[in-house]
Picture 1 (cartoon, rainbow, N blue to C red):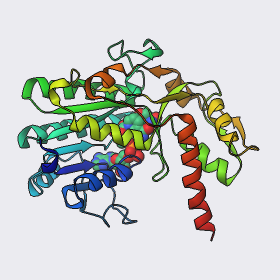
Picture 2 (spheres, rainbow, N blue to C red):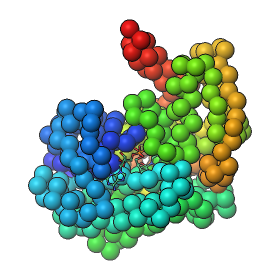
Picture 3 (cartoon, protein in one colour):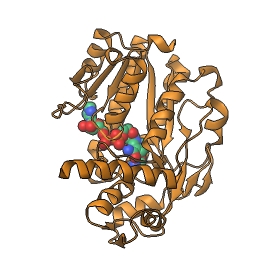
Length: 324
Ligand code: NAD
Ligand code: SER
């Protein structure tokens, strides 16, 4: 597909990733070419002020099809989903939203010749997966409902590519750290909450154990990955389920130490949530992303030091601005 001719539909656009990815895609392809949608109304005008926003439930194939036809969409970023912690509280609903939502998107994509971006996750791995340098192709036996739906989603994307020729592309996002919309109920949310509490209270109570290693990624890198894989030459993509992508891996204690370089008195303590701890313990310590680097040139810009500095600087300005 020519990059100039892209008309994009985003589902779940009001979430943590969509709130920023929508704007990045509008900057790149033009405001009028990026249609943002969500189950919720855009009450704050975050996305409707710069382009089209429409309510859309991904559980309705008809609603998706109508918007795709109306705006002549040819690429879908399917972000709508329930994340790991909320999915574990309502597993039946999570299966319904995560699986049937994706199925509907793929069906509409098949009938209307759209490419599809699918955000998979570190959640597709489980306790029997090699934890260090987790390979692109390895044992995948997730034990959370979120992970099960993301793994089945990867396989479904691969199926639609192989059977129907749908141009499906995906990445396994680490925990995403960002400063616009708050996270939607995941196991990695501590790595965002900690920054707000560090600046507002000087302390943070973490729901994961101090020594829990997890892959994380700063939002600018996550958006770069989502855009670059969709623009990559399809001939070079060996994997149509999803690619491992990585940039930094740390424990809560290591992140607290990094924050202390900027806020020396910052304190952290721990009240472990057993549900989220069990999920985190079953996810990789760090992934091997060499396949993404080889196939479509993936390369992140932020490590833990650069991310921490930027997060604190952006949030400090916002908090100071609110106080004026
Ligand atoms: P989020 O929870 O912040 O946002 C999800 C959005 O989907 C919400 O705005 C919600 O209103 C919407 N939604 C829920 N049900 C819907 C439905 N039936 N129809 C339409 N919209 C619906 O999630 P996020 O963090 O922005 O994540 C976006 C995608 O990226 C998800 O698929 C998620 O699994 C994946 N992902 C996120 C992370 C992360 O750390 N944020 C990591 C890995 C993968
Ligand atoms: N950040 C996500 C979660 O914790 C990972 O996919 O659910």
